[in-house]
Image 1 (cartoon, rainbow, N blue to C red):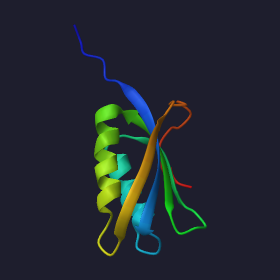
Image 2: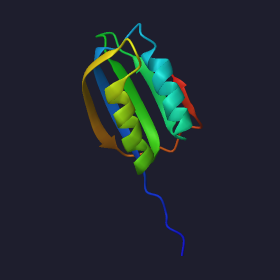
Image 3: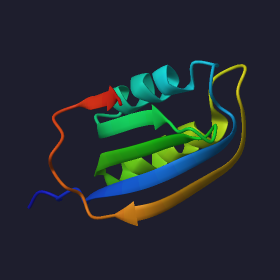
Image 4: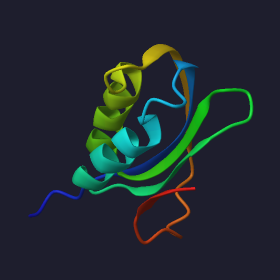
Length: 95
């Protein structure tokens, strides 16, 4: 009997010094390497917004990535909520 992997989704807002430091590209590369689908984008208030869908264990790994950030960034807080996966993404992109 094969074990089925639970698929989920998260929506996150990353606070701190996270714009102008390659944060979106860092998230893009990590999310793609984890096989996740969704997007990352800068918001006008200086935060970064992320929507990711995929296996729960990979989503948890992405949350750790978000809390660390790339060199030069300073993450002060990551707010995240589990959301219903849409299944509408074919890859992970910068939005």
